Length: 317
Image (cartoon, rainbow, N blue to C red; front, side, top):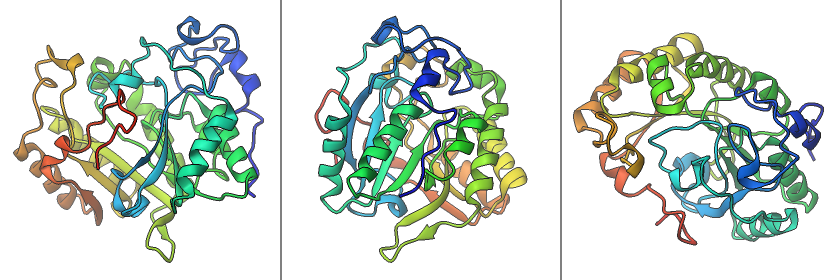
């Protein structure tokens, strides 16, 4: 069993939380739910909105069977366009906290269906809880591939402590435009932070996706970028960073699944869907920059991948 380093990422660290780049320094061990005063407004509980078998990931991660995904509540970003807005909005209430045993029971029941990967979605503000779950799952003799699915807004210090725990990094690279990062995610420093975080993930995993006999990824880095309406210049900046400062050989998922949520109804750009020509121009940029490992989406994907977390099964097959 892989060792889990907890010198920095520990429940004790939540007494003055600096797990993510927000660097709030608040005591998440006092109070509960919305009384927590940090950016994410989550205390030290196991705040999970959904543990679900998810077949919407890139095929190399879960194949036809899918991935067991743990969707944490709230987020260390505040993306106005988030498709998971029902659970990521930090102003919203937290769900009833699960016990560790309850969470592990739900996870292992899904893994027992022949699922080989365990993903954590929006984990950057929930690292001690994530590590506790991984340790408990492995303590029951399960050894799933661990997928770290973040918004790319991560501290390098935290990522370094995850090197021997995380098998697959699945981060977003949302912006290289500071104005858009400020307007749409309340994170003016996102480009700077994401550059450092992605460099660290690349240092750990490199270009190669290591596959098992079943053709599914066992180790590596796969970076996602969601093409946003009216923001093609930002997309090109993201692609130029990835190709120029990391490598055009890295594995890239260029996503077309943007769908306007109710929070963006008054935004002049985000209130409309992505245009086909915008996605095609983004694809052309990947070719121009020499990317060789690009996952693409059907342009109609926005109608298939939008979840409804008011349902027991948020994602339709």
